[in-house]
Amino acid sequence: MAVRESNPNFMNGVPELLILRLLKHKEMYGYEIVQAIRNRSDSVISVGEGVVYPVLHGLERDGALRSRRRPVKGRSRIYYAVTPRGLRRLVDLSIIWTNLAGAIRQILTGGKNGEAIP
Amino acid sequence: MERPFHELRERLLRAGAAPRHVTRYMTELADHLADLRAEEELAGRSREDAKSAAMVRLGRIDDLFKAMTEQRNFQSWCARVPWATFGLAPVLILAGAWFVAVMVSLSGFNTPLTSADRFAFAMYRVRIGGLLYFGAPILINWAIGLFAARQRFRAVWPTVGLVAIALFSSTLRLRFTGFASELGGGMRFGGISIAAIPEGLLSALVILLLTALPYFIWRLHNSRSI
Image 1 (cartoon, rainbow over the protein chains, first blue to last red):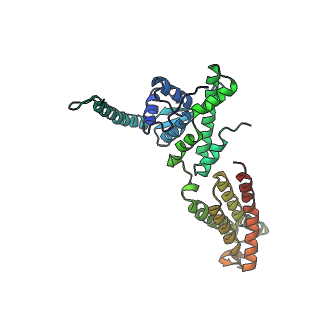
Image 2: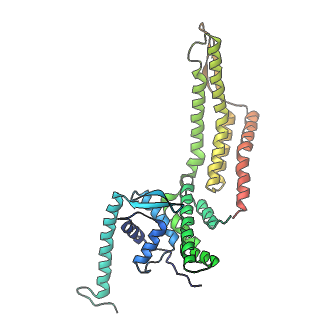
Image 3: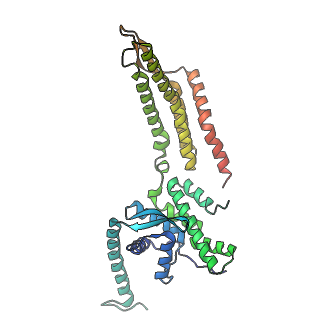
C-alpha cells in the first residue's frame, strides 16, 4: 500500500503564514486547512496533518485566530478565523517571506552581479 | 473502545502539557482522523487499509508529540513551577481557608448574645467555621492528588504538598477564648498554638492516609496502563 510521505518539521515559520493566508477570507476547520494547503501547493507542501493543530492553538493563544464550535453533518467542528491582530501578523510575515524568497531566487539565478548556481 | 491517541495523551501529560490543551488536541486529532478515514474509504480502500493510511497521513506519534511540546505556552503551571503549585499554593490556600473559618466562627459573636436564638445562631456559625477548619486540609490534599493525577506528575512535589498540609493542619491549632460581659458574653480569637507532638503526628497520619492513599493507589494503577 503506497502512502504519502510527510515532512514532520513542516518548515518552521511557514505554517503560520499559510494558515493566516488561507483563513483571511474564510473560516475553516483543521482538516479543511490541511487539504487546502495540499491542493493549493500541488502537494509540494506535505505535512503530518496532525501537526497543524498546535500551530492553530498557538496562533489562537497569541490572539491571531479565534475559534468557535459549529455543528456540521452531525459532528461538532472547531472553526478558525483570523482576527485583526492575525491580519497584521499576516502582512508582516508576507513581507518577510517575500523578501526571503526574492533573495533566494536572486542567489539561485545569479542575481545582478553573479552567475547562477549550476 | 478504540483509543488511537492514548499513548500520545499520556506522553504529553507526562511532558507537562496542560490537560485542557491536551484534551482539545486529542479531540481535534480524532475528528481529523475520522475525516481522513472517510476520505480514504471513498477512494476505494478497505476499512483496515483506510485506517492505516489515515494514521500515516495524520503523522507519527513522535511528530505529533514534538509539535505540541515545542509550544512552551501549552505547559501547565504544575509543570512550570511545581514548587509553587504543589508546595506554596496549598499552604496559602490553607491559611486563607483558616482565616475564613475564624471570621465565620467569630461572626456570630459580634453582637451581644442577649437571647437563646442569638446564641444558637452564634453556635451555628461556629460549627460552620469548624467544618471549614477541619475540612479544608482534606479538600486541599484531595485537590493536590487530583491535579497531580491529571498531569501524570512525578510524586515528589505532590508528596511534599500532601505532607506539608497534613503537618500544618495537624500541629497548628486555632484557639478561641470565651469571655463574659454584662450583655451576655462572647468569643474571641485567641491565636495559634502548636499541638502536642504525639497527638499532632497521629492526626497528620490520619489526614495523609485519607488523602494520599487514593492518589498513590491511582499512581500504581496508572503506571501499568502504558
